Length: 118
Length: 107
Image (cartoon, rainbow over all chains, first blue to last red; front, side, top):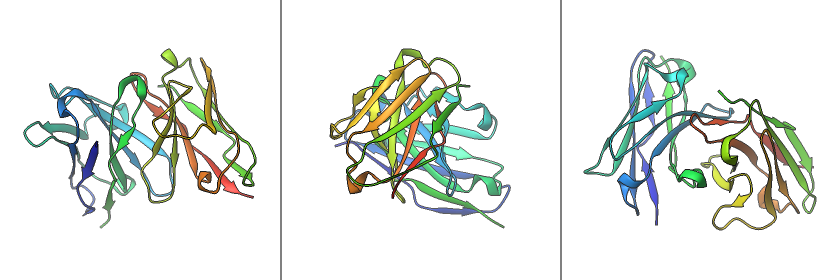
């Protein structure tokens, strides 16, 4: 069965960077794009960007351009999302979600809480 | 960027009642790339509907989606206790966006 397992919670200081991982299993890793979505406490869902695990190409939401980097490691079937220059407003749960094309995103990771605090 | 506006913000209903949730887009959503997700506290979102009207695997038939262009609706025919949650619409074209959510709460 498809599983997306994310790395554990992080606490970071303002100005630092965080790198969250999402390890995929149960399917051919390079056959499906992967989204990153975040959710601030008590708020809605916000799309951050998408990566093609096959070639590594990415597309980022304009809001995060210049601050986010998505990468992948095909040898471990893992995608990564790194967010730099963290500020308190980046405190959120970060999710990876597999892109199923016309069938939207039916598989999500469990989420990773990133807390930015001095 | 396509802006999605969901209404109402909160829906107060009793188990067994019908729920009708609306999602309006600022411009036409291509190829009905419109999805609905359910989210409960502390959980990841769960896909309910894709392509505006297709139910995802394992989703009960009391959930149905309709609409095209800029106006979409999620209907829950008879609310079960486990259906009280927050619902988000999403357009998943070239630059996906989410609506702000509708909370369905117990009256």
